[in-house]
Image (cartoon, rainbow, N blue to C red; front, side, top):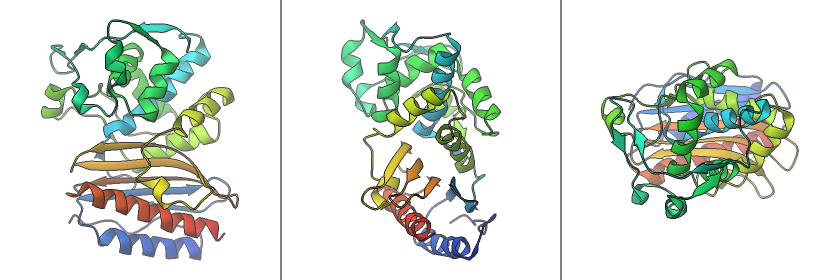
Length: 289
């Protein structure tokens, strides 16, 4: 197990105690790295634990893609109701060679039935987040440009995130040219959306509505009490990484961003349980203050 840094930037005794509880829970699951970013939006409490550790981003890279799309809509350079061709042919970052996505490797197969037809940008963004459609993601990022997505995310404060390419570019993956992120990067972007600073207030509200409909709830949502509202994006490469990045509103009024990024947990179910337990411990601490 890789060594982990002690919790840093704690505010208050209760948060320090939370840091100790999180460290004890994380230590029970063999891993190669766990990054945690917790920041209250309604008070100054924060806890960062290996928040700058770099991970393969997996599908969490879809969060900055979402932001870029809505910023472009704000700027008038795209319309959310315009229709784009649905194709399954993309170019590798390595050498420009063509590749196609396999529906069996995608968490959503519905869009493949529409290849040869069209879909609205709004539909693609919804599929990209709510069911983590890789095909929708590649269609969007091919139009927006990975470099622009990275530049925007960094301008918002996610200063080390790297979005290089679309999904399932196997040549790029084997060459190590992957999308990467840290827990801090994802937390900064979610806080920007929650505070209505990532784009126009209306666009941020639309992004939250989409994030609130995500269907994969085995991580942070599984640790929340009844009545909590969660807006989040997961990312997963089997037995490699599992991440969940969320903005949470508790029934008592606490508002916070929580990101848990994990690497090298051999049992995917153990990764889900770890993230859910971290979420539960954070929610208990936040709900007491």
